[in-house]
Image 1 (cartoon, rainbow, N blue to C red):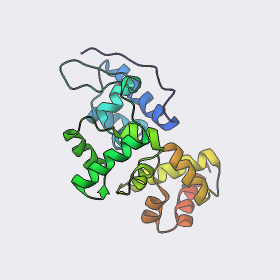
Image 2: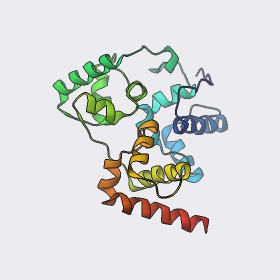
Image 3: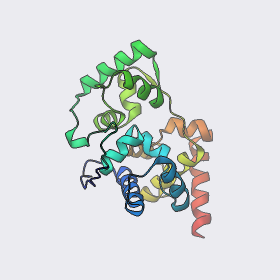
Image 4: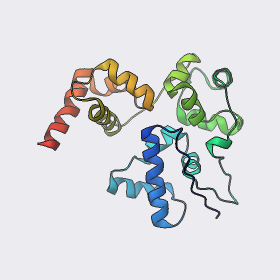
Length: 213
């Protein structure tokens, strides 16, 4: 296995940089390319981002590993972002239109990844988010309904991070803009899980108060 650790992270969001950092930490500890199952055990113990969160950000575990700098021979590799082909917004919209003709108007990340195996030149989830700011915005512009399921833990973690960054009494609009910038769960996903914005913020702020008291 030929392993190279990349230090190119200027194009990643803060959360994405943290995810790559955790992968590299485990890789340094294991002295090998981290497997997802092994990473999951460490993530639970160290309170790292879950593998599912990483896959949602980068499109696949293999792509996250590639961005972290892990490359190997004898398997299908993913190029580092700086070496990847460039896609315009029009290219991505056209790709999503082809997806829609093949698969229908409802899109999930898992369905897109499966479809992309048959269309290897299609842009990755990483490219789509990098170009449009969020998966949801790209799908909406292409006229598709993005279906994403988050656990309550993932939603509360996103709210907690936003509150810690912007302060208590977090507004709906402030979170919505922050979520777009950081590719976090949408306000729609939070409302679906908690029932109302005030209930969501109250629940997470109460947890933070109890933790800090």
